[in-house]
Amino acid sequence: MDVIIISANRWQALKCFAQARHTLVTERANAYLLLSALAQPGCKQIITDADELEIYDEACMLLSKGQDRSEMATIICKIRLAAVKARPSDEKLAVACFRACLKRCNWDYAQQVCLS
Image 1 (cartoon, one colour):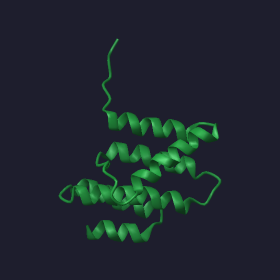
Image 2: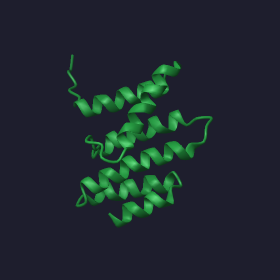
Image 3: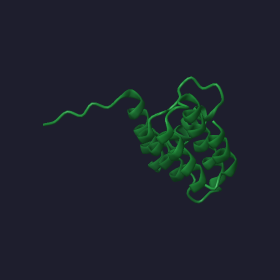
Image 4: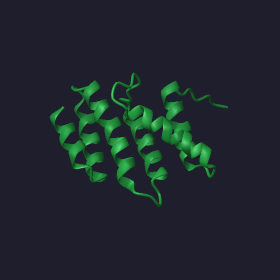
């Protein structure tokens, strides 16, 4: 049996994704609260791993099903902008975040990612 080691940050991202998929409102609310906290200015935990960002992105889209997607798009774009600001020399991350903001039709954050 192989053992897979997952970092604490990756584990938190996967937990958030699982909570976003859950049918219980309390679990979905926990995922929303975590995403909202990560999007707050001054948050000490900045996600800079591209895979973790994708997991959080999927969690946001799951939470926005049947609702206005603009709020969740803004949350994930704020998280992505913080990632680009934390690692300005990582061009690959910046391009991925820019494309993700465009995909979510969030032009303001796409522009801010370009300027970072």
